[in-house]
Length: 202
Ligand code: CDP
Image (cartoon, rainbow, N blue to C red; front, side):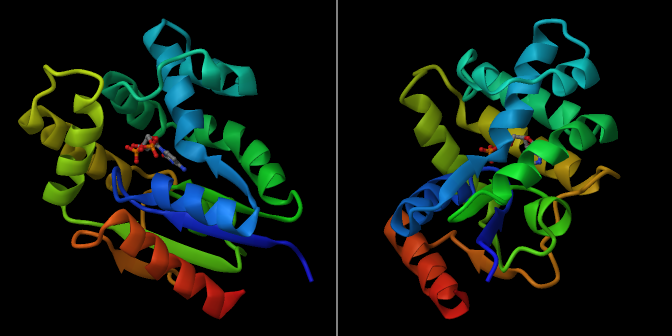
């Protein structure tokens, strides 16, 4: 049997990063946060690099060079993520990663639809805009006390629209993905729900 690929997609702060990390540890699978790739290119773009060239020359060490959590980097990431050549340049790396034994969890926006359309397990995590903005606000406030809730909410809303409406690999649940709404769930409840679903498929 081929190795198991678990694709976890969804909008900003839907819980996919936290859930994916725990699930990959439980299963001892490799884990790739594909958003980091786009964020690193976004960071390079803010430094003046041309996004396509930055995507083509991206190195794994670039992921540690920047403070990728910054909101301005998230915004730049979603801008460069709509460029088809940027996405194409990242495909091979993501697919190679997904093929490594013993199995892999990848989280992003287009894993179940474009990067790994044959993944055995596909999950689309979602939550209300307010719930997601609140989570991101709490997360970012730990680093910056001046952060403003309304601005965070507007930035997430803007990113949602851009990610959903771009022509190249828009954010959408794969037709065979299990949709899980985490608005009312704690981290533990979300992990338990996702893990129970995975166990029915593995
Ligand atoms: O953590 P959060 O959900 O806020 O964002 P992220 O997963 O780090 O992704 C940052 C941005 O990269 C997103 O808004 C998308 O525009 C883009 N992205 C993408 O287009 N495709 C992916 N597979 C992952 C991220």
